[in-house]
Image 1 (cartoon, helix red, strand yellow):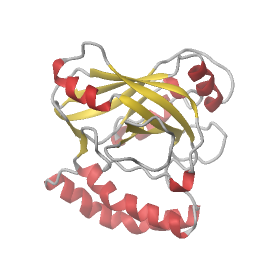
Image 2 (cartoon, rainbow, N blue to C red):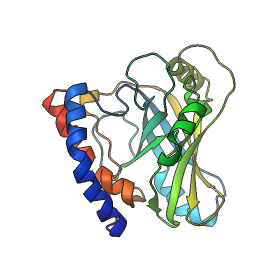
Image 3 (cartoon, rainbow, N blue to C red):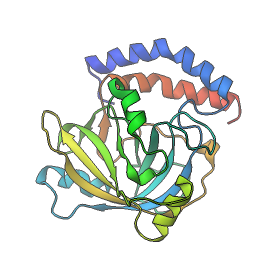
Length: 248
């Protein structure tokens, strides 16, 4: 993580929040956020003829991906109003494994553009279809070749479907229609720049207790920065410790 005043402030806030995160992990016996999820394997394809500023990051992210899609708060199969989210691990290796490899990149996103609009985002999230939403990192990154920027994923928005959202996603993947467009928005600019396309090939099995994602696994050109990432620097390890103590 880039160390600056905002990052230090976030870390101090993280120290204040850490006891609550620890207690929440102990009581829930699961992740406080994104407790249940489904894993998918896929590929990352650089956008043809992208904006010159994103060519470097597009090339670095190209390869393979493991994605875990989930509701943000609710545990269980019921599709209740909630923010949906995804953890995407960009890799050079196609093997689906919980163990991160050298140079892997974790990016965590939710159908929430800002913590200032949480209730509006919950109302607007389509909890029945992962592909019918846009997902944001909420906190900014230092993007290789671009500088400080926001990051988002735009789903392929296939229109009305039936069945549970995980089944819908698996069906879309089997048909070659499950994809997300990765975009970045350079600081101070109105436009989002297309970087790559993430194509999901299908569901896969991962050892969940061994799976640990952190935005500080930043081997492919996205470096976390800012207050929110400063908070995560403290609370993520604390939450993981609580889960390990409960054996989950």
